[in-house]
Image (tube, rainbow over all chains, first blue to last red; front, side, top):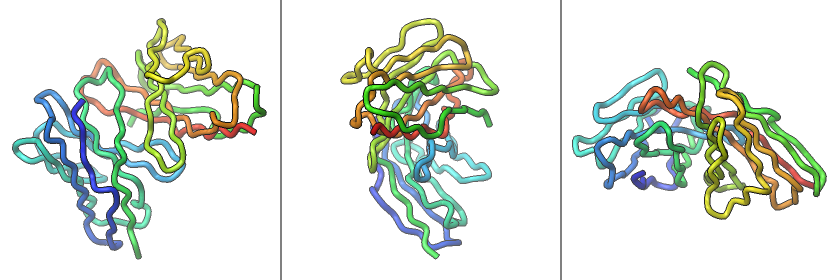
Length: 110
Length: 117
């Protein structure tokens, strides 16, 4: 699986959009981009994933660049409950484990 | 979305005893499940891949005789920490993916906090 690079930490004001970047310059054609988050002392929670096109669901939007070498997770209206570590993971085959990097620790402040 | 249930959510055991952790996929069949370990302020580290009906595959540095994995059915995998020691205290998390549907997300249990005293 391709390696990902994320900033170690970010802050966001409550109610504002949180934009979390991820670089995956060595991504290959059959690899998906997955985003998970982990709130303290809980298992990771799935947020969204995509292959080439931008994706949106009730939690977030995923913007993938045309060359697929980077992506941005957007939480449109961050709340205090969105404070968590966010992981960007690239993986090709659903038969394989997801390998977690260090992620981005997002702090949403009042 | 699909649900993976992990039990217990926390356990305290004495040094030298064994502890079993269960991981169940509640509404899908998981031919493959994964076990992770997470130490404080660190990321999840893959320990092993559990395949239904066959032996688990362990990551380098993980002792297979200490961390026994059984995957007897398509919905249940168990991790047994044998002869636990304080350094085994950690957060253990299981995960499952629906292998039939390519490119789908993995689902995670809520984790088990193991404290060995």
